[in-house]
Length: 271
Image (cartoon, rainbow, N blue to C red):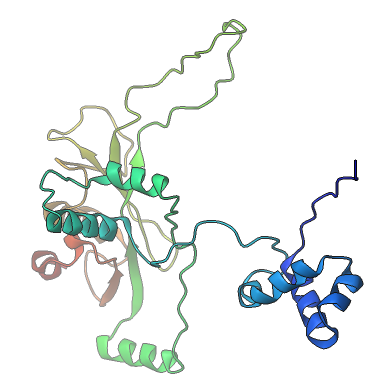
């Protein structure tokens, strides 16, 4: 029996080098030079454009390519509902579970942006100075943000497992029962590095009876997040704790994000 040849894989850089050599000396000469078949050289010449778009270290241009770029799951579900309505399929829901199954079935990948950067304009410093002069800002007095947090995240592994027998398929993990409950924390800091009293918003109607440490403002909300009334409490009980926050001798600049509770007319008037 003839010896079986072992299959080899070549990088995109190697393939492009062989293609460049073949354009000058021919396909057979390239095969002899790089110890490859002439047929491989011809196939690499046809795929030269795609090879130039690949990474030099990559060996194969395989995988399912998404033809429509920048398509979110919401857009995918809306498009599917539109197509179902045109096809007179009125019982189609097109929920998140259908979308996840569709993505797995079609071998698509939903990727998130890992970096987001902007190039500052050339006149950035001039605009900043102009804004400071118009608003008569003395100093940056406060920066605030709100974020979701969990009561308790159950551990995947336990350290004390001596009582578990070898071979058991299930190991119970002790939890507090609140691993699915959330609360909102509103921290804030000043330009001089001082921190304002944090606010904690629990998802409930009544105030908790537990004793909390001093210096923490406790509030409740049905949905567990910041709203107009809670924002007013934060201004009255947290923001006034900054330096010169009670007498208001100087104007201040409060930096917040564009959350709905931050940009309502009532909150703006109160600020």
